[in-house]
Length: 445
Image (tube, rainbow, N blue to C red; front, side, top):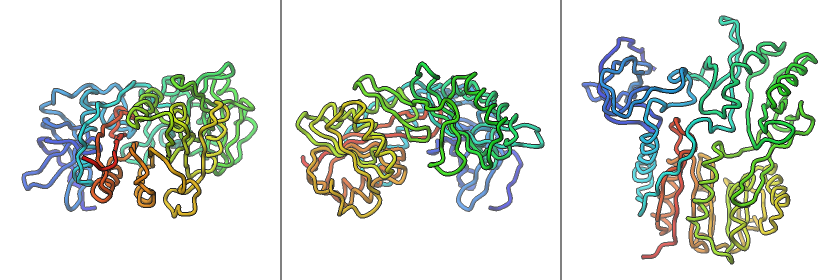
């Protein structure tokens, strides 16, 4: 990277990037991405990065504010990387995400949906029920920091609370940091994962998993137990890989969350993937069911099924659902969840959906509808192998608009499908993360 010029400069912002930064141009036409600036604003900024085709900067003073600018709720906004859009009116945030999705569909996939779905939204504060706090002992400050990374990822943000995390956890960041700082192993704890299900008579439903690089002393273990008892948190320890995670207190905590709309209770483990936003998750499942237009005699294939978050609710509406997931542990827990909820018409298979699937038994079965909920890398490998002609509809749930756009382009432009509808879902309010959903139908007029 070339030398950075720290001289403040004045610039006009005209657009917004996919990651929530303002877009401006210098007099010579070079693009500048300005953190903390919004379209329509004139700001004074300082350069933070210099590249051949664009510069990076941070707004240090707003000379002319956009009407959509609001005062961020969090005192750490701009330093902590957990949020990128707290300064932007909530109603405008979701429309900015909708535009990111549409731009990606057109620019990458060369497709346009016939209909744009109304955005799905839910609680915008205190929604995050799963995440990872970084931990770092900072000798210069004589304290241990617990929080998300700063915008400069080399550092851990020095925060006291988080407004997007569930209040039971977000309000206790300072207490968690003090706990870790009191431990003998404080320099050997790099991260803490949190996850929340529904409360039980025994504890709050919230679990903390402490990653530690050296064995914990008896006094450290006792301090962690006392903290868990005081706040109603289950405490898990992780001395190594995923298979080393085990409870410290209580002896056998039960983690679960309910989807009452479908009379389903999901049991999970502390490092399992569950959707971050519980309220939005329910809305997303219902939207998926509606877009699939399910019929009682149909069979549905659910790829990247995880714990069965979609599979089991779908099973309430159709003859049979087959869920496929790459992680064997999640597949086992999905089967257990089906049994726990007395759902006999859901089957699960373990398969790496990024590899050759020709020998998989479910590939030879017949289905009516297809649901995809892939990781950021998308579903291009599996889509190229599926006998797509058997499906009447495809619903694609995406956590990355670029991979959705690529795969939509393949379905429409190479396989003759129609992109009937697409829209965004605000799974992560106040961040630039774009969650979206798209519905395809077999090509016909």
